[in-house]
Amino acid sequence: MTTSPVIRIENLEKHFGRLQVLKGISLDVGVGEVVVILGRSGSGKSTLLRCVNFLEEPTGGCVEVDGTRLEAGAPSRARRERIRAIRLKAGMVFQDFNLFPHLTVIENLVEAPCTVKGESRGEASKFAEELLAKVGLADKRDEYPIRLSGGQKQRVAIARALAMRPQIMLFDEPTSALDPELIGEVLTVMKNLAKEGMTMVVVTHEMGFAREVAHRMVFIHEGEVVEEGPPDKLISGARDARTRRFLEAVL
Amino acid sequence: MPFKVKLGLVYGAIGVLLVLFVIAFQYDTAFILEWLPFILGGVPLTLFICFGGIALAVVLALLGALGRLSHNALFMGVANFYVSFIRGTPLLVQIFFIYFAFPQLAFKPGVPEWVQPLLVYNIAFAAILALGINYGAYMTEIFRAGIQSVGHGQAEAASALGMSSAQTMRRIVLPQAVRVIIPPTGNEFIAMLKDSSLVGLAGAAELFYRAQSVGKAESHSYETLTVAALIYWLLTSIFSFFQKRLETKMGRGHVREEVAPPRARGIA
Ligand SMILES: Nc1ncnc2c1ncn2[C@@H]1O[C@H](COP(=O)(O)OP(=O)(O)OP(=O)(O)O)[C@@H](O)[C@H]1O
Ligand SMILES: [Mg+2]
Image (cartoon, rainbow over all chains, first blue to last red; front, side):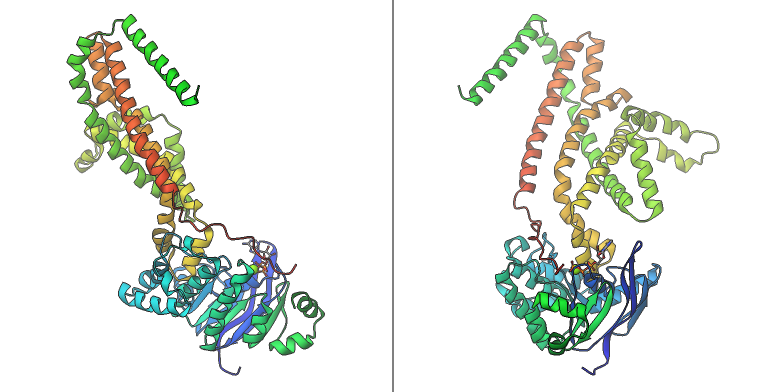
């Protein structure tokens, strides 16, 4: 991809106390690009993703999302505003869904557009219904999350993030909490999203998905980018021994 | 013999013993019938004080819990002091302080006149203030536990959607915490029904005050206090009944998301 980057991560560092989890990661993601992040458990994949929308505060480096740039720094009112601006551009999908259990499916979708963007319930609901149709859950509109299967929950969670009309989507192991037979339906939704040109950063171990959808795979080891490249290239000919060992284990 | 029947027999026996006790000590039924309306006349004030007190306590407990959970040193410090000081001093002292000590402050030399109405209360209002402040301190922990019972992922998901921490608290966390908070708050209300008798000592003409003053004046404390106890018991039983129903209703149709299945962790 040669389009200009919509996400720029520069020299990103994250410490938890004395433990350094991210050791200066730099990564650009272009408009419409799908990047899959790979790495062993504890390598820092979630932390990296969570630093992009500042659910974790980086301790060094810089993140830029669609022109909104923010360096690591001390909290302030102005900073909170910038973080909010970034979060409005970056939707996030979590491993364990985190749907709001006290709200129905449709209410889950319209909550943030109404409270954060001040959209009217009418227009928010209309768009929410379109999104539910897109993820194949139009008939679950008025159910509570407890009545949904894991796969359905995750599809609602994706729709909920999309309801904010984000420019990019971050996925943190979206299928890892699902029974194997429910993984496909979520991946299908994600594939369709990629086809529509959504910029996506996906942490996943689903190599089939990565191979089919990703433009680029990035392998992270102990908080550093070890190797990156197009899926075919990386899978058939990884240069780094650690990447090769990891790929052998997951393929 | 089925257990329920046994239990019934035990209750029956206790009842008979109590009746025998009352007969043996010559309970003055005529006297109590004469004074019952007067004693019962204290019930509305008791209930008024308790409803007012619990309403104030809920507000203070919410503020206290938010303060204790806040990252702001001022809020946290004030909340911690409130809880520690109020829980560390007797309710009776607090009642007397608000009703008898505050008015004294109001009339110290140099105190501006507009301050006086802030420190001089009628006794019912003082009672509500004292019970509300006292119970608010205890209920702070209930509210804090309720708020903390809402999984961290909820606040995280809301933040990721761009909601501010105030919006997250109001729209996402508190509505879920309420289910956890309401049942123990019902218990606190029932406890307050009984503790409200303490304000009688400061002169509020509520249930206990009326019973004990008539009893003392007419040398019939045995009669009047027995009746007062029965009325308290009746009141607490009624509210316990509703509280239990509320509790089962809150527990049912548990809407919180069930715990996610064991995570497939990354390749280790
Ligand atoms: N809040 C935290 N406090 C302290 N340490 C943390 C915290 N969050 C993560 N870590 C540590 O940071 C390291 C990286 O964690 P992270 O969750 O980013 O890994 P991951 O690559 O997503 O792993 P997994 O595949 O298991 O999800 C781990 O050693 C973890 O224990
Ligand atoms: Mg992770």
